[in-house]
Image (cartoon, rainbow over all chains, first blue to last red):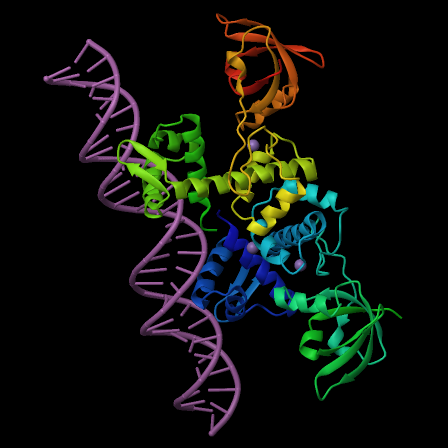
Length: 221
Length: 221
DNA sequence: TCCAGGTTTTAGGGATAACTAAAAATACCA
DNA sequence: TGGTATTTTTAGTTATCCCTAAAACCTGGA
Ligand SMILES: [Mn+2]
Ligand SMILES: [Mn+2]
Ligand SMILES: [Mn+2]
Ligand SMILES: [Mn+2]
């Protein structure tokens, strides 16, 4: 298979750019995020520059070009549609589909992808609440905020989990915080870095800020 | 992606062995079948020997070892289950799924594959009538024969199309000879190398022996 | 302003898998 | 049996993508 690494780099750069909007992505961040040596990143980035997919300033970092962003969005769309397809048709666990999609995303044809999109009814979010770019690569933005930043008393709905780690996703499921769940912030202990949330459907949990910071919510008031 | 070429070679060797049982597979046949230069085959075969997946006699050819046959059967199982899955769930055209499966077969996990198998109800044949090895890599053999060899008057059922070429499959569909079709051989012209077949559901066609030789049938008497 | 520590690049190398061209082996035919 | 034609192997190259080690660069603190 040829383009696999290049597509993974583009997608990763896109996600890192989205995490720190306006900043260029450092080689170190890219290397860490891809579990690859920094020297490997320097090499691959030169390839991406040749393809006009990134702008690169030595010792500073990379930024996607418009063309590169398009490529990256296309990979992201494939990834997320595949994740949702696997959950919907085969009832795969939402904590496992990321790894599966990471490989399949590079080999599905455009025709197959459009069929998956139609089959799923042109969905806008994947099983983790991550937005799915539509066929024109546009994302419908929602105004979600970080659960860790929410005051006590707020009534919220889980919109998205920003972490693909299988163990973390299983933990989130165990405490009942999958996207779509309604909850209320009972209290927060900024000193102890924990908050208590009560689920609408019953039960409550103590949640570390480190965990809550990876849960995005929408206001329900 | 690493193993992709190796898996394709193993699968190809298996299919060529099945086409000429008992013979070893020549390097030229492999090269032609994989659309690769003969020198490339020599190189890859050495890799497969190192992995103990084939026995190789220089200037003669290769044979799968038991371990290599297992690997090859595993790839074949993935390929055919994926083909059927794409046809069943997404209504993809049977003439296009081969190409799609050729890429996906290398990246699906064991877990995903077993889910597909269960979802499909543990099928024994793919959309082209090709047998699907079960989870223990066993194939249920059927006693089909070549349509081109059938005498006039025989009442038959199409079992399998032995050709993955998209155009040929579309031709077969156009003349109504997809697997499962009941037909009768009206006449055969061995001089002109054509035969006439009448479909049970109506219509009849003149079929060249070259085409009929790629259609396997079962007796319906 | 200088330096140490962290980051990034360069240099050199390995694995996989393809190619072409040329040499070697084998097969076939007269 | 000789000699040509076909097949296969070898030799040398290319391209991708990764690595380690060492050099170069940048930055923050003294
Ligand atoms: Mn990937
Ligand atoms: Mn996701
Ligand atoms: Mn394949
Ligand atoms: Mn098939």
